[in-house]
Image (cartoon, rainbow, N blue to C red; front, side, top):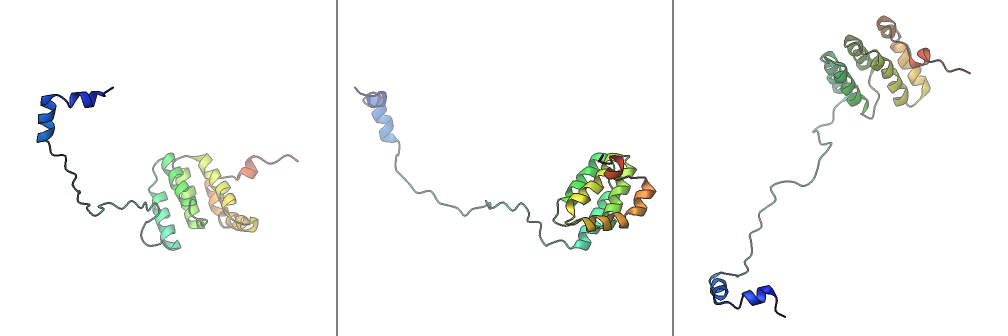
Length: 149
């Protein structure tokens, strides 16, 4: 049983059309790749020094205008492999209180506690930031919710 294509090619019109068409195989030129298919997710150029990191985040916290912006900057700040310096934390606390985001101000200390590798380093941060905590009225989570023993 002949297929439809075989049957349709028997007609005189189909033979005339196929004879006029050129079915030659030809090689297409291969052009050089115009786009790199390598994804450089973290290719930001030169490495940033700790001082540049501090100054960049201090400026960002100074320019934060709403709670979402403060939280976004904090997320970016804590996403690095090191703990932010006390000056950056001070600017973050001031920004959180400026936009009236008390919960974020308290959670900054929770983030520090999770980020530092040892308990004595967390206590050093608390000692360093004691004055700003008292000035802005920011308690620690441990003070707000003491564990019942």
